[in-house]
View 1 (tube, rainbow, N blue to C red):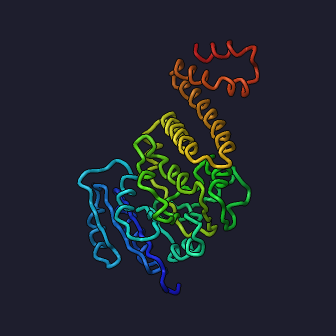
View 2 (cartoon, helix red, strand yellow):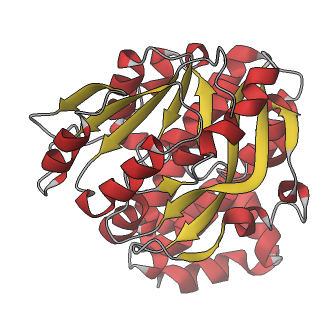
Length: 329
């Protein structure tokens, strides 16, 4: 890529116990074809050999900050916020420490942002890889239940429409490592994501940033999203119950609607209507999970809160009371 007056990109690498993947991650950053970037290395009190590896890479000229926490923050987004505060670039790339990318990742993903000041976020498709870095699939399958071919090609879209068609249903930007966004659109308050939303904080962040703005999707897979048993997602599955995960999403959806009401966008009704249906479905699932885990009273009352959805699915108003008795007996 011809390096002529290109803007500075701040590459933030938040790490915690990813010594196994750090070298591949960092080499994929320092070998980018786009040359005007700074690297901010952060460690959240790792207990493995991460600090030694990061200290070695900190000697590279493009590393402007290398900060090691004395105490684990317990929240990835605390590290994100720290990195953004240190960043000097016009654009931000959160390059998560267990992923990696193609040498032309920045070059290809930044292009739409350079060509149009109205675009605030650009992201690309991602390969799925295992802990050894072998490709096991592609994240295009993540959107198959929403659309048949929309994500098979590049697109530019209004953020409000993107939320209505896709983001309100699931996080269709599944990996932060695939995203570059304008620093000035990422307000400090957007990164104040509490413990209760830590498993979907990126989803909330994207929602808030793209509202009333434009974004671009690059259909070529320049990012490698690694799945392994120490990832945030894997730990959530291992450590938390399915009911807990549902509760996190329910709280997240309340937060989205609170934010949406402040903005009063043209398609607010459509987004809110879809959100209400999803909330009912999540509560329905939660109710039966509680019942089947012998928390029958709790499950019963959760189902009562979505009574109309229960009736709709089972289609037997006359025998509803009998069905409830069987469930809680």
